[in-house]
Image (cartoon, rainbow, N blue to C red; front, side):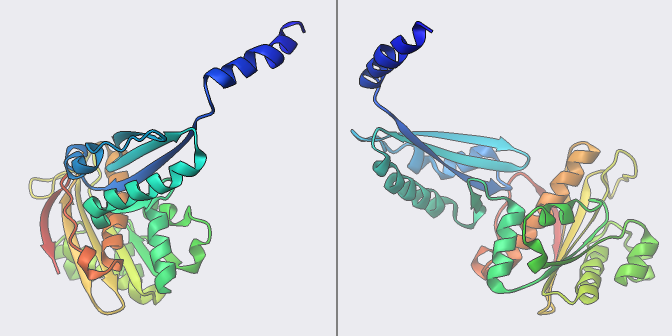
Length: 282
């Protein structure tokens, strides 16, 4: 009881006078598919510049986790009104170096960014999954209001379900296998037809720890994106990690590929240095 009035009347005023209030705001930009060192090199001209002034101080950080790199800039100032303009300049400077590799900022997710593009374009999406077991649909439906653009998600895990639900040809499965770009293409095309959407996404892979072979080792993942404009892109990648990690990477990679295709054409060939792309079919 004696300490409280002393704190209120003496200590707090003293500390406020000695240490003025300091406002702080952090900008975080999210990049998918690049290693930390590559992003660091690309933004070096921004982070090496002295952004400090008499009114503001800027600190930079770069963090990597789960196939994603976060570029962060924290601006501190005793004057709250000084922070916003600096944040805007930093945002523009980072984006001028990284371009379409930046899929979102602060709390935005990859699936949320896709939803915004689809809503803006008034387009719809369907998904066909095998190895990911519904993870892609789960990420997409974690966004409130996703029913406005996400129409349908199918988990076609067995060969028979790929044939019955998605119209994959038995001959494709026999000749090329369930994990192949040809099968992924037919899965995507089947999902597009079944749900009558503008876009569809399909993924099939070998998550392990069993099932790999010399030509298709564990971590082989095939992804296809199809559009109502009758275009279909298929890719094959080699991923690493545990079964869970391969499933999660496959889901994120699928969404990243979809984002590429629904963006303007100038953004459809983003290099991803952390992945080993085996081959590409159009």
